[in-house]
Length: 146
Image 1 (tube, rainbow, N blue to C red):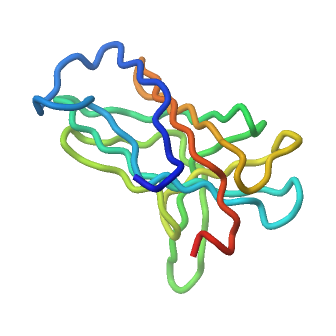
Image 2 (image 1 turned 135 degrees about the horizontal axis):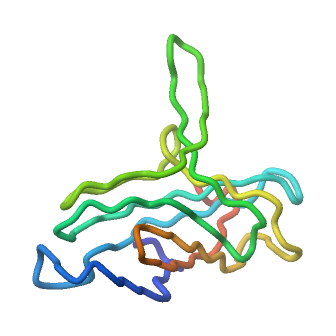
């Protein structure tokens, strides 16, 4: 996990079975939330979700108290043309991971609340099935993210 990243709360109603003896059945790691390029502009969040449970999970919503909109998107290059589309959900099979990373799946964050800047703690609420996972990390400046 990157320095400054913190898992704040884990509520896993309905995911009681776990294929591994130690640790929670669903975890988030490598959280990176980048500062917007322009004041009040959109920005991006990256992380990895690891589903260690005995069931597939469906991530169906992302929220952040620091942004009025948070959406799952996916970037692709088809025939040399870069495209991005909104994802309604992301299914993660049992024992699998989903990487939200540059050039692929990612979280678009728009319309930041006042005072959001590099160093600000940003929370992400990851909704899946009947469960909620809340993670937080300090927003990184674009120059320190490389």
